[in-house]
Amino acid sequence: MALYAMSDLHLSLSAEKPMDIFGSAWHNYMEKIDANWRSLITDDDLVIVGGDISWAMYIEEANKDFEFLNLLPGKKLLVRGNHDYWWTSYSKLRQYVASNGFDTISFLQNDSFVYENTVISGTRGWLIPSSESFGSKDSGIYERELIRLELSLKSAVSNSDEGMRRIAVLHYPPISSEGVPDEKISELLRRYGVTKCVYGHLHGYACSESFSGLADGIEYALVSADHLQFNPYNLDS
Image 1 (cartoon, helix red, strand yellow):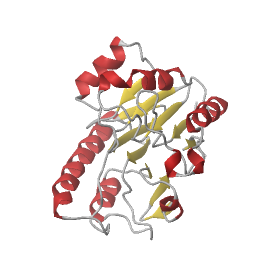
Image 2 (cartoon, rainbow, N blue to C red):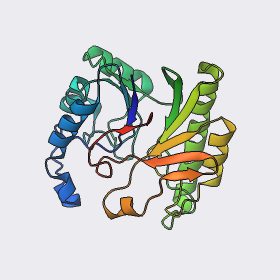
Image 3 (cartoon, helix red, strand yellow):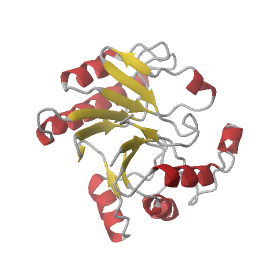
Image 4 (cartoon, helix red, strand yellow):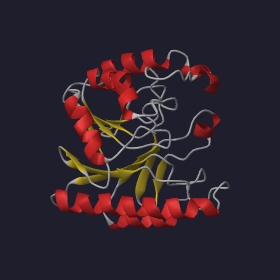
């Protein structure tokens, strides 16, 4: 039994959205995801999928992508990304997977998820204020995502026993390329005992400028699919 993470699958069986325009690494990427996933993951493992999961616009249009994901080995815990326009209310998402028999898929939204000795919290996140492109319109979304993150972290405290490992997942980077964590996000993670945080959103050249490592007592790791060469990242290693 092992815990993995991989973000930004950008599945496109339900929509015409070729990813090759973002670089040669994306050529035949769904075949790479399928082959690499099956070579690593067993049915007893859990994979955190940190957002930008399907290019579908509506949940009813995402069936082929969810079928693809559901048939891969292991359990999958999904967090929303900025391109997951199909993501609707939590109750509708749960009803959707139940009615379609997608029994290996769960969602993380304002709550937490327990797997073995680990409790997982997370949210989509947003641009952090230190980002060059952060503007006045981003402030309100950023603050709302902080509220969502704390709700999830509080849930983790309620759902975990003493000594359990606490991991957080955000779609947007919670740390600058120079390794400076966002002050508010970092404070929340430290206050609620998170020791590791995985994130995605970045692709191509941006991955080479990203930060992975220890900062303020928390280990950060970029898990965008192309950055990982489409191999799920083992959080237990």
